[in-house]
Length: 389
Ligand code: COA
Image (cartoon, rainbow, N blue to C red; front, side, top):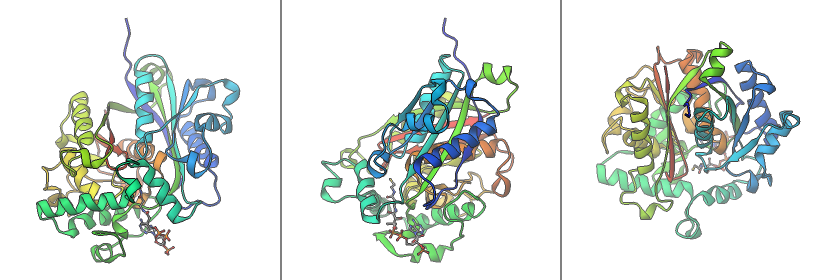
């Protein structure tokens, strides 16, 4: 008979996110991985498998075979530990955690290290925008000039028109992210911004201004997952993964019934809440995938924190660190940064710190359940995790 194991996060670590010109892809991956391993207090002999999450290194850095590279430069190749790469665009990080979770839950492995890394700032702005656009549907979207920002702008315009939403509601998502990032030493942008600054920043894709957009980022994050048996035998402290769910929607946005309802997020959230046995009201904080401020509003709705068109009512007080649903205590993609493969794993680093009550200045008061939402591009893939006791 197969015995399913509970799965715990027993260690976490990350690099700073930002323009890190003095660090290479491999430096970043190893720095985060070693921090997580040290934090977990484990040795190389304990590690059964490594999952490396990465979106675009083959094109940006001309480096594929990321799993082997990470194992090699962590000094683990000699041990013969399997190391594989998981790619699901900007959802690569949480997708890799999902795979590691299943591998441990099945009883096959006791300990897995999941690392996410991306190095995006070494090439010119127009080049990186073209590369980032490859995560869209080539034949129906990017071939005609669509970029992630222009797609988000189209979605924002339709949403604002249909629900009579003012730009201010979008900007408040960014104001909140910058406020929280000012308390996070690993964040790319630690400056607070006012609503006026957010509203009046330079236009990128109407109606989205600079302060509605996540930046181009380098960075890496890693966590160590372990089975219940390993945790008990080695008397480890940890945070339990209560649910891990992943779902898809059409890649090209035009095929969807609604362009401002992300069915992948709705389905993954429904599965995750069912599996965890909790409701959205029980969530103590959420890290959501707000690569553009409009996606912050849509995630609040598709995750079940507000009805469609009503997320605007949450953005002034409820999403603050002291509010009903603290949003992105890390600073989110807007201000902590958006290094593709590292983003989803970075959300776990934040949730681990929050639930262990080690998040310093940005600690949410006595959190019980954390919800993590990591999404690919315009919402083709969404991964939702719920962590807690
Ligand atoms: N938020 C805040 N400040 C930003 C920023 C952002 N998103 N992006 C750049 N900046 C700042 C830089 O730090 C720099 O500041 P400085 O002059 O004080 O040094 C200044 O703006 C200019 O930076 P630069 O790198 O030249 O900006 P850019 O015009 O090349 O890029 C964007 C700006 C918005 C086009 C770029 O950040 C972008 O493409 N973001 C979207 C990322 C994306 O599509 N992600 C995909 C998600 S699926």
